[in-house]
Length: 430
Image (cartoon, rainbow, N blue to C red):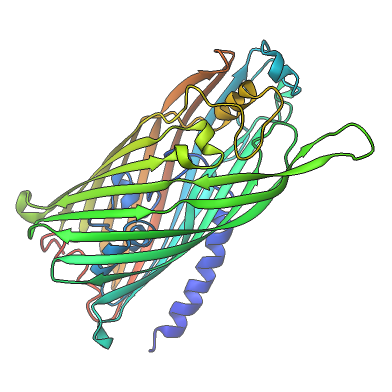
């Protein structure tokens, strides 16, 4: 138990840092507004690929919890990343419904700064108690979007900001030598400003989210992973103000926001190059249409993530590519999040333009070094999301977005079996 107090103090310190870093999440390489492990220390270099054989423990905690059973001993990891989007928004001033909101002609780049985000995780196997299981606990930014065009007078203060910090606990259990089962429950702390033009203020809310997963070794070289993630509901109370003429004064309304149900299937194989090359792919299906707010803006979305890792002794070279379907709905309807704005659809389409993650292509790369100091691993990753644009409100509004990100992480391994992770799952590469 000589490490117990240092681990606890370190965990408490970095959790506080993680809260501050994740307090303002940025739209960067997200799919819709969700990150799906694309900023984790090893998976971040593999475009987020992590459902079958995650190479960092945060990706197991926030992804497929069944893969937690791949981690032995006591492990603690802290990762930080910087995400820098470039988001341009313009309006030609020719839609009466938008002009009624106080909008006029403008063309501007978002003034929202880039953001620092953190991912923290701790795992502990309990095999010493005779149980073939590993517990995991994590804190990290899982979703986010930000855009701010207040510097352009014609935008009438257009701002949108959503940051969700998740605190998740999970367990992975080896049911047999080949099959693992996992479950996790997370509490999301959300802060939102916008997206209703000129009428909103910042509000906070909480929401629960569950995850179930399976991990199966099809052969000694091939692993399949499956996970299901529930919706996460937030009610941001009194964050929108409607002015009402007369003595009653203004009315304040709530905005309901939900993150979608997600279903994922992953495969990983290390047959090539004598086990030194790990190839992996994840397929995600995001059910946006069944959610509050985003269901009016996005249709259901497919995401494909590809990752590779080549091991040379203590060094890991990683690369990844992700393709995401453009989720923007062509017919968004008249209301969103329980709010029916005046003039309906044109206003909803303008809201779409402020949350228009229409980009389809993302790339990433990175390096990992095992035992950079005894029992300490180091990871470094970077990536970019290629520019894409789309028009809204009959072509009168145009949004264009691109981004890049860079991050790093350290992992400490303690206790019996802590060095086993990756050895049997990556063909003895360690």
